[in-house]
Image (cartoon, rainbow, N blue to C red; front, side, top):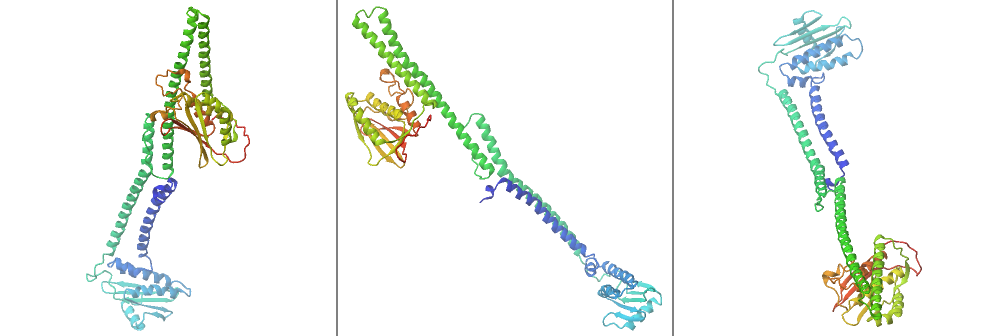
Length: 502
């Protein structure tokens, strides 16, 4: 999984944690360094203090140790010698010999140092004073006797008060200060770098998709539905952009459908106007001939009357077809579906209709499949489909007769029904529009008596109501093939009452 595929919530949590964690760690390191540096001033690190400040460190250490010994000598508990030894070792580290006596008895003296020699040296410089400390450029001498506890502390050694030129320089303090300032500077630079880098990531992975989305929304508002959202992330923003793009596709499809419906509406109005104006003109002409006395003989009057009747019947059929098409288009035709063995259905239909169709010039041939095949159809509506397709073949036959083969074949879980004729056929550009309302391959639309132009449109609506699909193909060798694909239903034959529009 890539970083860009992590959810925005998790990314924000990680970024916020890093923006807090990194500075805290750096400040913790700085604090630790400062803490370690401060420890050099503790009572346990006198030698380190002397290393950092060689000209002042020994004086501070010796003064601190002497003051501590003086305070501890006033104590009366049994542990004071153990406590005093710590300060004695600090003095010894600076080259000063120490001696501790209790009631005139030596209880501690620096290793390998003669106690009597040390006492004589101290008394020679300090005399018999109770508390004396002498410190010059050559040596250090200290003597203290506590009247309270009877403890006597003596110390002497070559420890000059000020460092001499022979003491080598030590730049540790300056180095430490430089190190601290360097760490602070680097820390600030790293914090600024991380802040800028993380902000750039957020900008690229959050703000850029939002900007793309805003641009696409503005284009769609202007009516441009061709703009595409190229956002490849899989997080919430990516899903939002993908959903927005799907919405764009739906809007585009809806607009295309609306435009198509608008074209169909205009063609429908034009078709109705054309197909009604022709018979109305005929009716008006025949009626005018009777009224004006043109049809004077009884035979001519009867002929005019019969033409008026036939024209009215044609108009009635047109209105009925238009009403049925409108109900189908609105989904207001109930379908009474039955599970039917389609082979038996066509065998019965051909047995009943063969002679009548043959007299009209249509030769029927049926080719079924061996196994039983059950489909769900409405017998009344499906019969309308078959009759409309056969009537269409009769209308557009090349000669006095036309042959129609009804062929059944199985395609996976569907049944394909092919109506193959050898009529005049249609051109390739007309195949996709055969099922449009009022569409005829005759551009002049002169032969209105042959049909309303709604037959195949009604067939398409009925097949859609049966959950099937229909299309047209050119017959090899000439003619037209109408193919219907219906889903195969499993189980025994029985009737299902289902009211469905489409």
